[in-house]
Length: 323
Image (cartoon, rainbow, N blue to C red; front, side, top):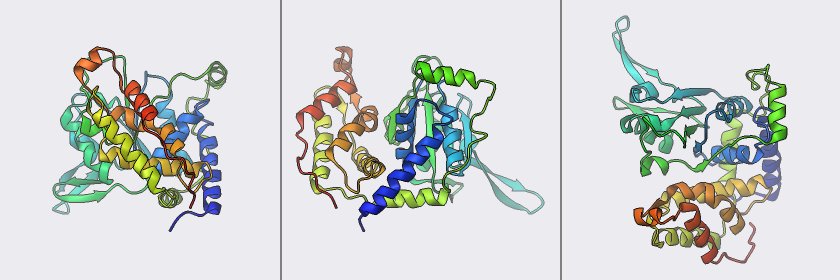
């Protein structure tokens, strides 16, 4: 069943209320907030590549407070173990049974701070839960619940003591973006309220987690014309065929674009996806999935340049088909 125009209008109105509420804590970053909400409603995850002190923790707290969810923060370090993330099974002598103690991954919004500081073994503990929203420990599977989203961060400046995120890990992130520093007016506003350390403490929830799950299900019914799907497929193929890339956009990346574009369209009051939605989201959904050829990268080629050329070369469908 396809989303109706009335449902799309309600979705857009609710989406803007969520953006406005989160904006009380994360000042001057409405576009980043929209991208983060898009990822949540598409049931994906976000990777922030930012310098410290730009408000990533505040965004995670504000998002959790807005949807009446829980939030946890995991500080990734080289000595962090997989069980420190997922949880551990402990033998209880009183009951003479093994009991599972859930780790911090079991929360609505999980902030994985400096994820690239953990060893590859610990990073791999996130692969299953990020893809399937469940954790398997000692052969027993535990559901993470809905909604569930990982907001991971990595510092692009300091590389000492870090591990490069493998392609399989990067491919799990629906969106990669950065918050960046606020503009002058927003900075002054932040400084004027500096006595309040946590601006999320006074925030009121806008929606329940159950309603967020319903919104995600509704967004999935946004109409996507076959011509738009063919356009996405051609774009992905071109990234794979580009001489500068060793690895282009995967099928998972193509699916991620469809899911994100559906939410993006609904957030603007439309019950159908346009090629312009794909073009607007391509830099944040696809750039981090491109693996460059070393020689081309040494010559100055970047994923952004390759993607921009692909978007220019592949003709977008002209029809504006609605459901």
